[in-house]
Amino acid sequence: MKTGFKFSNLCGTVYKKGNLVFTPDGNSILSPVGNRVTVFDLVNNKTETLPFENKRDIRRIVLSPNGNLLLSIDELGQTLLVNFRKRTVLNYFNLKDKVRDIQFSPDGLYFAVGLGRNIEVWRSPGLTREFAPFELHRKYAGHYDDITHISWSPDSRFFLTSSKDMTAKIFSVNKIEGFESTTLSGHRYAVVGSWFSKDMRAIYTVSTDGAVCVRRFRPHGVEENLTFGEFPRDEEGNLVHTIWFTENRHYTMQSARVQSAAFNPSTQLLVLGLTNGVFGIWEMPDFNNIHSLSISRKKINTVAINPSGEWLAFGSSKLGQLLVWEWKSETYVLKQQGHFYDMSCIAYSGDGQYIATGGDDAKVKVWNALTGYCFITFTEHTSAVTAVQFTKGSQVVLSASLDGTVRAYDLVRYRNFRIFTSPTPVQFTSLAVDPSGEIVCAGCQDTFEIYMWSMQTGKLLDVLSGHEGPI
Image (cartoon, rainbow, N blue to C red):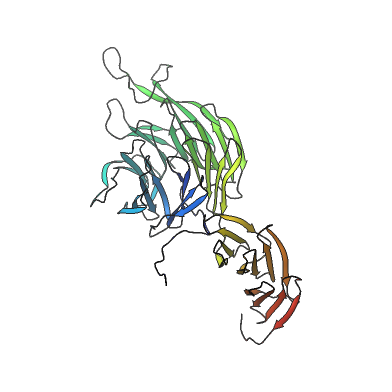
């Protein structure tokens, strides 16, 4: 008897809360599912749940630019350092506060983490097991409210922080002559995100009311834009006084608030996710609207763009929904959604190829056990599903529900071809089907009876009584 069981995959939910992260090659996406991380391979159409787990639900995940190191942080700040290639945990660490955001620098030497209204920059650990791999480089303060977003400059010398105090700030990793931490104001609501342009000649900031500011760097009193990071000197060798000014202010013209935002420097695309389930794509710095689409009934909690800028990922925690959209062809690369409420029952098909789940949301979902994807959802029930069962040939799945019906679904044509009911309304809680697939039985919780139907005709054959409690 084989007893060496090993955790393989997590089905039933694809996203709970936190942020989504693309791998450096852009072909896979990492999604936090409770206290675990699931990797969706978008090219080979497979999923894999990583073997480690946090103590609490994951709040933030971040992957190093070379794709070797993964940091997984839960709600209390407990951090796992993981060798992503080998899927092994290297170290445990406690950041001692709720993490608002965390980002690796483009060169991979540092990572910045927002803790409350303060920022800490740490040196990136190595790939080997060390006694104390985390080394604090520097602490930063200056915001008057919680951090909402952190982004790095392309040269890894500076980083931008956004906050609920309606400002964004520029900090340097090391002391640089001619630079002091700068505050970018002008928004009337909390700043959702801020980013450097690829050439570092502009900064884009976005607030929750849909205002997008384009800011330029220039010497004071001179209308000539400069590249940030190069601090000019006058003829006498003194540093010239430089400023950031707001060149343009754009608005999304949407009634809903901005919930999440992402920017791709290489393609200059800005993606905003709104509280009404609509997302939009704008090309910067002119703020030309390329695309706008409603993809959900609830707010979009997180947005991510793959490195090439072709695929956009969206996560909605209220619905447990994960979407990957290719905006050029306007097609879904991935569209998955877990059960809205608790999962109440599960069944394996005879050949082990499929898994059927029923939930309190009155839905029956069928999952591919090999890939981990849900490929069909049946929504005909009007109340909680209490039992699911496969026939011997795995061609039909049956479900019992508190709505008083037992339904049979064809897994070839994906349709509900039989509905079994009782003469008087009852609530079914258990289900069985004989090996030949001819007889279907269901037990109820109110009259304590067992009903038997014929699969071919759908007619009630017999009612068995005698139990003195719910079946």
